[in-house]
Image (tube, rainbow, N blue to C red):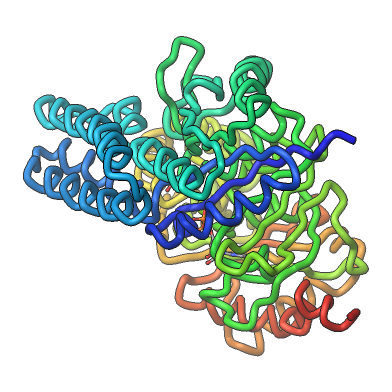
Length: 482
Ligand code: ADP
Ligand code: ASP
Ligand code: MG
């Protein structure tokens, strides 16, 4: 029987230093005994943030600061390399390879500083350096353990559109390229270590898939290679009932559906990039979330249908990097053009709208946009409605950045009466004021807007109300059975 092909992605904390990389190499070595694997890696934890800072500092003309970031990054990578590669000649050869990548970054920043201009294309080129540095180190660590391995730059594999900073794959071309390149490596017994986060247009211009995009790289490759499984290794035991940093008694969910996991990711659960499951939705490849620091844990299995818990709440999430924009005034009631113009304006400025709610009694249209989009959206709306404001048809266009969206997620919740009622009464008991609500026709999410200061209370109250801390984790259910 053919052995299963698995794609394994290791996130930033999983490759955070030499000891972590060694742990990853051990996991990969053990897994490679059961069948071929393709590894996808992120940059070492924190590196992408620092690279982006170097690029923006350069744009502001702050050359010294950018140089000092590069020198810190060099030290960090050199230290890891020294601990990982025992053979001196090999180490020197690898250090020269990494040095070339650092020089490329410095040149890009130098150009940016001279022009005082940071294009989306240059930002992609600089922010991608972290993965290009980590992949050779992980491959080197595997070779140290006696596993034949080679780093592969995903510009050779993943073909994308030209949308810098959030590119999408062109699947047919990606399939052709990935199959040719990776199958030949796998057939010759080599484990490829692919740079996550990165793609390239058909003309070879580097793009990135968006922050946190290595998860997406893994499923894109999983789909392109017809893999049997994708395993996303991170620093928590799986998908939890809430972000453990905000709800300490959050538990691991043993199995969850594509839909539920996507809703959680869309509303801010950082454990998964929001587009991750898109790539595998047609093929139905199972995606696992597992802990590279506790590989003995089973983790969470994400499958097309998930496992029903009878239609109740499965998990909660919150997103705080958002702003509430309100377009309000008496002229809004019965004026369809206001709604139309509002959304064509937000579309023109490419604002990412996460939630919409309209209150007819207060004559308000509320939109929640990503914080990064708030300024330009409000400016565009004020311009669009300048005349209406002058004639008091539209009274105000305001923005409130101190808010958060909380989402309650579970498949088929709409068919279970009382969930919204319980959610809102438990929040009322804790004096949490609800600013806006959206349930829509989605059967799997109720989302509401609260003041940012109330976000944690809202999460903890709802978590307790639906007994989510009592939900048995994969680990506990295993113990119970045995
Ligand atoms: P990686 O570097 O491996 O990609 P991330 O930091 O991007 O890891 O994602 C993992 C983090 O996501 C966890 O450490 C946790 O704090 C956060 N997180 C937020 N919501 C959830 C959730 N519902 N389940 C698990 N982790 C979550
Ligand atoms: N290194 C990239 C980031 O920090 C991609 C990833 O980690 O998934 O956004
Ligand atoms: Mg991530």
